[in-house]
Image (cartoon, rainbow, N blue to C red; front, side):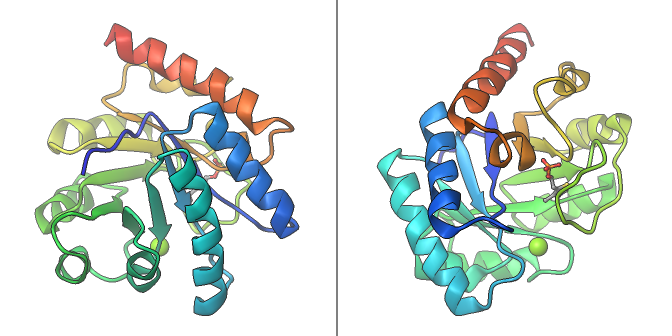
Length: 211
Ligand code: TZP
Ligand code: MG
């Protein structure tokens, strides 16, 4: 399946009414995000599934692939484009067996070793970070830009950078071997996610054209 990591929205519904959350996701889709990851750490499986159905209606309307964080079962149940797996989720080769060759599998990698292992096991793209400290609830440590660059040089698959990134600070990555950036707050906390997405995407596309 073809996919574009240019501007990757990772959702966060914490503290938001459902309607407001879905509105923000839709607004970001309108603004041109190229991939959406539904990330629900607190919801039990059934609620996660219900939310996934609702978000998939939106992403389908904008023909944007939907990735489900952590849960292969939820991804398969809603026929999402794929799943994103961290170091403590199902192993990538197991997920690949369950999902088949056509679904996307993204993996988090913080070291060259983890990156090479993930690609060997069948990951289609890697998420690398956190590049900056983040206010989003996540168990992570910072990844140096130099490590991100080493990972990019070591692996043959596309990389998306994540962690504290926004329109003001993402310039630091303009010479890095990345396919795009992934953000939570820069879009989910924006007053106008559509406008924020448009601006961020233009910036990233401008670097990509200069690479
Ligand atoms: N993984 C590493 S940092 C992060 C995740 C899921 C959260 C990024 O959120 P934000 O708000 O864009 O810093
Ligand atoms: Mg995970």
